[in-house]
Length: 362
Ligand SMILES: NC(=O)c1ccc[n+]([C@@H]2O[C@H](COP(=O)([O-])OP(=O)(O)OC[C@H]3O[C@@H](n4cnc5c(N)ncnc54)[C@H](OP(=O)(O)O)[C@@H]3O)[C@@H](O)[C@H]2O)c1
Image 1 (cartoon, helix red, strand yellow):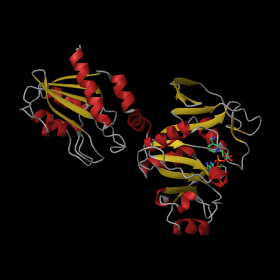
Image 2 (tube, protein in one colour; image 1 turned 180 degrees about the vertical axis):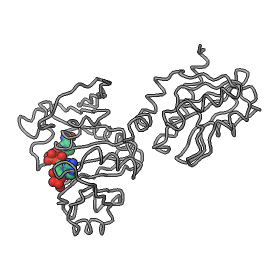
Image 3 (cartoon, helix red, strand yellow; image 1 turned 180 degrees about the horizontal axis):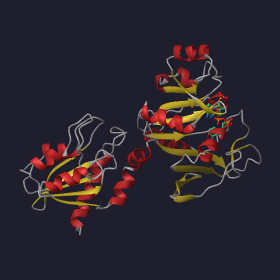
Image 4 (tube, helix red, strand yellow; image 1 turned 90 degrees about the vertical axis):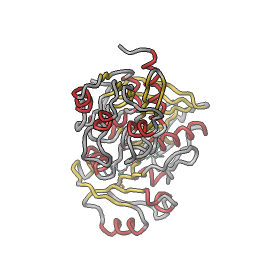
């Protein structure tokens, strides 16, 4: 059904779409190419959140009249009006293109095939499913957001060969190489928020910033019921403190909350539903609904790793193994309930190895 030329054009859409990485989220990355008589006459991509869609850009950049052209777009053109930009299908129809080819149907329930239907009804030849697996991989965060109404969750664990994440609970242990640290900073930039438990803030005093890679600084989220922190913790005192969000329970000490707010840090109180602790699903709902966080990198420590895994709240697990045997220390998990994952890939990071697993679809 699809020619080699169609595939080439869709790959061009993916390349264009990737240019919007970091800037469009939590929207999807989308690229569009207009072809007439076997030649590209216009290209575009979604550049930033709230900005014009890829199709609009492709028509704006067209060097010829697009009547009778083919529009390639990795995601179904939108048809809904309850958003920042006008719907694209009326524009596509008005430009009198003859054919529209997409990789993926938009999983947004407001669109979900309706955009394609409108264009078919207007007499356009519409085809979908070209390189759809590559398209779904490119926008896997957006697809998950739409399907599950929560952020995409990546757990990143650095551990020794014998399974320890530090020498002891109250002590930070640098385990990984510079190459692995750079990889982690790239991971941070690729997520809209990073999350740690208060135990990690107390033991490690982490910065949770993007220093050894290029990319935006994610929101830094720390979970705590007690709000016991050092006044000098870096996430409260450095230049990104307005990007620190403490999530606590509604029973938390009001005076401590005031002190944190006085430092310029954000504080959110969630109803505590499970033994005085914040229910993690509710936490994700807050991050997604209130803070528009589409992707979350969970960075530890032991209690947080265990709770996320026991609740089966993960989409990707990145295990960074460093060739050291500590002999004793704090294991990555405590009383973990077992379940299967599937291996996606393995990356060599200098002396360390990152093993990337995906959630196993049931
Ligand atoms: N190698 C690695 O990848 C890595 C990464 C990070 C940390 N670490 C290590 O891990 C150790 C810290 O781990 P940890 O298990 O002691 O601490 P943790 O998991 O970082 O934090 C646990 C704390 O987080 C808060 N918390 C967790 N879940 C909560 C919930 N649902 N609701 C409210 N608050 C919640 C509680 O804080 P409050 O007590 O304040 O209420 C709890 O005591 C350190 O040794 C650190 O170096 C290793």
